[in-house]
Length: 402
Image 1 (cartoon, rainbow, N blue to C red):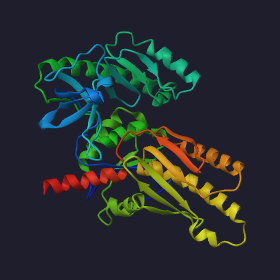
Image 2: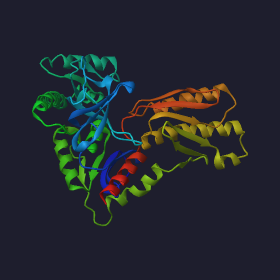
Image 3: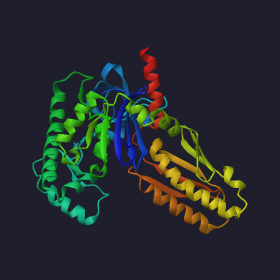
Image 4: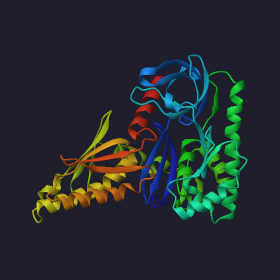
């Protein structure tokens, strides 16, 4: 069995379940799944514990006494909040760096093709789609006039436009998600505080929802329970036919076949070597992540001017940085200290090349500018914990159970 190509692999490790997406044989995302049910995206009936006006936030209690942070700008319109109130909340961020999880009162549940929202009743289309695609999508939206929820069509909707079977899948998903969200809201009135009213799909299913399934060659697992879920998901999407496989080779485990331990070690290493002999250093802090580009062994080359060597290392580093940011799921503010170059044209070209590489990232990543000190400023939208945080949380969770 070849590890090359575009694949999704799900297996069990010492850290918990692991879901790795490969593109052309290289891992591009790694998810560490600590438990069977995802926490982010879950909807709870919560009780307000206290309101802290100077930080414009409240703390609410969900199941088992867990506290969550609720920014007041995430309340429903015209809501007056008081201690002891019971409210519906959805988890938007897991706990990181000692902070409690964050939540919102603006609810949404996602499928592969759309997102249903409450109380927002607006209907729209992803901004990432081109205008001609948006026009087709708006005609589809016009057919959903009786929905009790808002609706946003995601970028994956492109799959459906010229595919009658998938178009029917889209319509079924819209109705299912809208009705499910409406039922969650209605059910809350009869449940005790702390009740989990909605659990999102497993992390590996959510990851599949984000991928272009027509480009995936294979989805493979050696976990029977995961295989059951994958078969269920396959039934809802014809693009997965003949792509889901259960691994049963007794000679070598799936974990060893895909070199999982080595991949994790490389994806969390502080130093990353470049083919030129240069290397990158990753230093995450609480406020930002600093990436340092070093000439390393390539500085010993004598056949080329230093300025040309430095430019080549920086351009190679730009591609590797874009890849590593996605692989490690680094987010927030990112500062890159490239090797100093002699001309403004070289710096301008470097920023252009870096922008072209990060543009391929499914998560919004922006190259802002280069400071007078020569530091390149970047930002990447935070959606989940970094890979290192996921591993750390997995280890601390396991220690707690011992």
